[in-house]
Length: 258
Image (cartoon, rainbow, N blue to C red):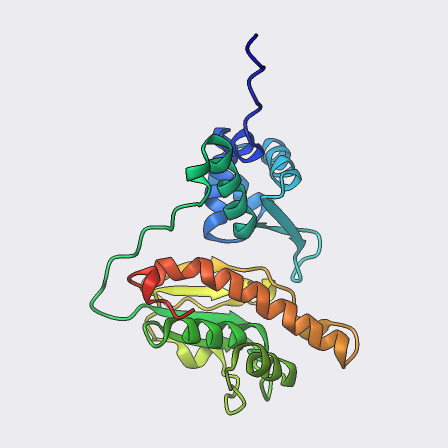
C-alpha cells in the first residue's frame, strides 16, 4: 500500500499563497507598517493582517512596536529564518537541494554605489551601520551616516562594540546633521529609527528608500553590562541586515570581505 503523501514544508505552505508571497516580497525590500502594506498590495486591512499573522506564526515575519508612534508596529522579514526554511524545503524534496542558492550578483557599474544611513542622534545605530558596511565592502561602496538631531559624540558603547566585536575603530568620528548632506547623490537612503523616517529630507535623484525599524540601544535601562549587551545585540542585527544588502551593492559575493 502506498504511504500517504507527506505534507508540504511550512515555507511552501505559507509562501505559495499569492498574497502572502506579495507581502514577503514587499518586506524583503523594507520594514513597513500594516497600512503601508495595505496600500502596496491593494488588499483590505483585515485580509492583510490575517496573512501577516500566519507569516508571523510561521516565523518568517516579525513585528516590533514603532518608537515614533507606539500604536503601530513595523513588520520585518526575517531573512535568516527564510534562508534556513528554504534550505529545509530543498532538503525535504531532495538532499542535493539542501543549500539555498546565492542571490545573483548585481551588474558592475562605472561608479561606486552611495549609501546613506540615517537615525536621530547619529551616535549609535547609523554609525554602526556605516562602519560595518564600509568594512564589509572594503571601499567598493561610498557610505556615510547622519542624524536629524545629532549628538555631541558617538556613544562609547558603540565605539567599544565595533572595536571589540569587529576590529573597527570609530573613536575619531563625530556625528553629523542630515542637512549637511543635502545636494549629495545617494543610491540608497536607509533609515534605522522610526522617528527619523518621518523627517528625513528629500535627497533628490530618486534614491531607493529602505527602512530598518531598530530600537535605540542607548535606551536600554542603566549603564554597564545591560546597556552594553543592547549595543552588542543591535550591532548583530544591523550586521545581519547588511549581509542581506550586500548582493545589491557589490559585483560578486566572492569579492565581499568575510
